[in-house]
Picture: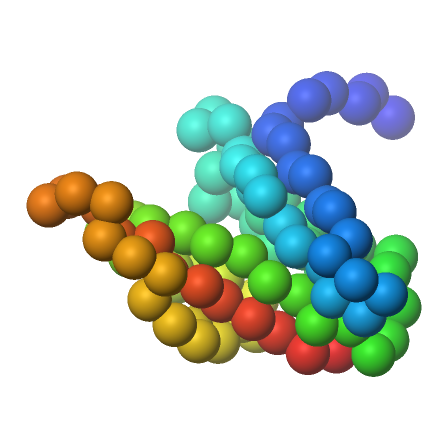
Length: 95
């Protein structure tokens, strides 16, 4: 198998049952090929059940919002308006 770097992800434990994803990105060359979705499913499998997953993204990045919702996340709150062009929103998912 030829392994190559196609993006990055960082998972950190907020508590015993809450994990936070930040950042999560796929390089443009590899986007729209299912890499992000498969990566997200692998992460969910690694950390087991009874976990709440949290992440933040920019409300204005519609593709990111669509992707996270496709993966099973639900928008839970508006974290705050950074400036006129950027609003951070929070997503969560329980497994």
